[in-house]
Image 1 (cartoon, rainbow, N blue to C red):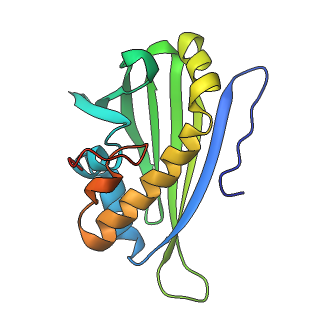
Image 2 (image 1 turned 45 degrees about the vertical axis):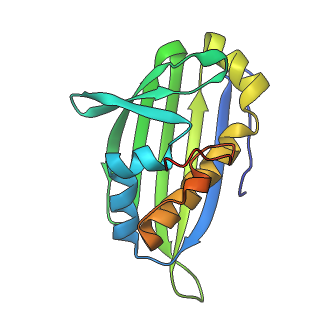
Length: 171
């Protein structure tokens, strides 16, 4: 089901699942995934950190037409094998994610699975239905690839700093 999407006509929701093998252990992967500094590198080009508020980190999401809706990202739960986040923000934006790690079968390393559920009302729904398909799929896969680069090599290559792959050298 890697990359599959499903839409619920009564409630516009996009569901994404991506998986990737890492050459690192689960706790290290989860530490990086939950670190706001690493998150900023992973999301470069798609979202910008905008501070914090209580237990949430604030992000500005880059969407077409120069809009920058803000979302609040919360870590809901973390255990030895997974981390769950939720985000809510402008325009009825809601996101839930789960990053899970399991030992790879039959080979060294860790299998990492990212599940994302995205919902937006109003103007953003229109943008998502016209412009974001398949962008969320690409961004989910890119987030996993960038996380793997960070965990395995300690950096993210500048050529991968933009969601479109153009890179601006700041990644």
